[in-house]
Image 1 (cartoon, rainbow, N blue to C red):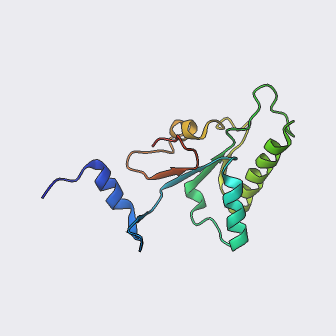
Image 2 (cartoon, rainbow, N blue to C red):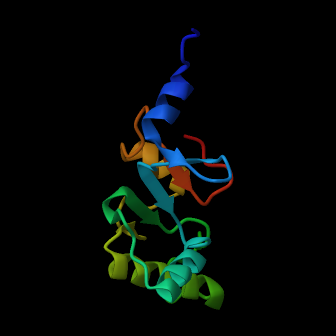
Length: 134
């Protein structure tokens, strides 16, 4: 019998079940969200009448749209302001911790999570940012 790797141990300890497709369903210990991909996800939750199952395991920050020269609201970019408003309201509606501008914790989603001690060894972490490493 071969020894399990650390990856195998973490994977196995977070396995909820195996789907009919053969894919593994994993329990995600931390979900990091930001303003670019979350409006669509929150829209789907609202359409289906669903709630966020573990809001205490979800953390949001505004990341990609923050102007560097002037962060005064409303943002000059109308689409950026709209994304910001959707994220703010959705975090309020679903009880999600939100690191907003001026909070002292806001920043790049995959940087602030380790900086804030949110990411820990052995966790499963999901983020709608293609280059987030865990």
